[in-house]
Length: 530
Image 1 (cartoon, helix red, strand yellow):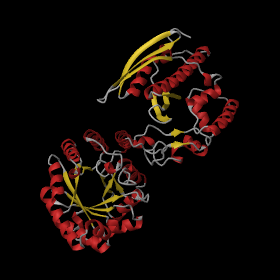
Image 2 (tube, one colour):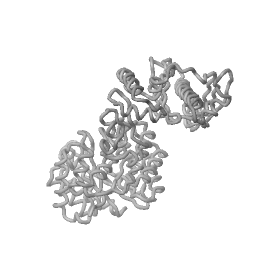
Image 3 (cartoon, helix red, strand yellow):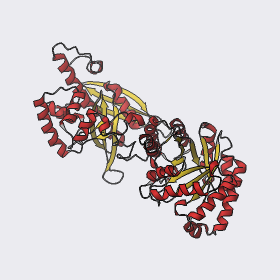
Image 4 (tube, one colour):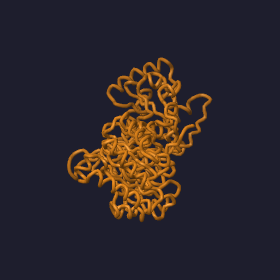
């Protein structure tokens, strides 16, 4: 019978300790709500003694988030434990998580205590935490480098004092899988009273083994795992929650356990954390990276088009990602190219496809990635030099540090001026929305980057945008000393290319026999005809 593995999320505590990833109270609450939707079993909200802000954040999360256990971290000291207990007073299911280093390295250089002193402190700290909270977790810090016999003594002291969870952390990411698995097996077999105590993993990625060691801990008997969204955390980070969860789900044949995580919330959780912290997810990140379900190699694309299972061990929709992506580059084949042309509305004959593929290969050798507009240019004479349908005549932007921004634009088309304003989450968003309102072809940003060209305050901002209009992707690029103006002009350039292509399609549809043009979007763009 499969056993449940509880997911202990420490994104708001250990994850926040990752350089540059600190969150304020509102951001922690927003993230906590998403973690609740994700279905984590335990949510470590913070380290109350660290600061007044951390204390208030734990209080707020404990008061609002009611389903999961809410944990607060505390060193094995009276002040820390009391502060954690106070922060958790409003929690429906509180847990005090206390820790003390046990490796000889830490005892000698950090604590400057003897083994006997540390044993006594463990017993006292766990017992004191137990007097404030029924659910107490104890972590022997640096367990991975702790003498095994002494680790057994430390764990026994914690269990005797009332600990309900024993967490065995590989604090510095030192262990190999076999070592970490054996440590759990030894503690489970040699510590009296383990039948009433849960074992937990906590691993770091200094050697790139955090997820592998977490799975090894499960094999050794752990039924709780501590992890973070996107694997953020101290130094190289923690075990990535999304990777652990999907490894358990995909390889249930060798890991007879399960979690209650709602996997479709993994990608939204990853994206929210990236937005809140400003730390982007690396493109090749497992499970939630942009390239996780992207295919460029022709052999892979051909297989995925025939049946995704050939090269995908899980579906993107399973983790909440919209779909897989066939990236057209120099490694792509005819099959993928034909499929993309079909998606764009082009039914190419074999000679046409052969010619397009030849030009495509030449272009792909010069560019890292070939976009829809490039494909359209290959089969549409003159597209690359598409005229501007709309020209920017006036741009104004007003932003505030309290939220919404407003942009006002004037665009000219065929000698007529169109004027509109829009609000957005930021000045760039407001500018994009104003352009959408005037052109009548709303786009969705697929990729947006800004680079500084030159030094100092007078440097140029170079904005590059890829946006999707009516299922087709177009790019724009512009430089200006004004960042928002550069973004607005880049987006307008993409919108103009979309307008040109939609017009061409409408003309082709109107000229074709037995074809009725019903594109309402194009009708709105060109109400007086062409």
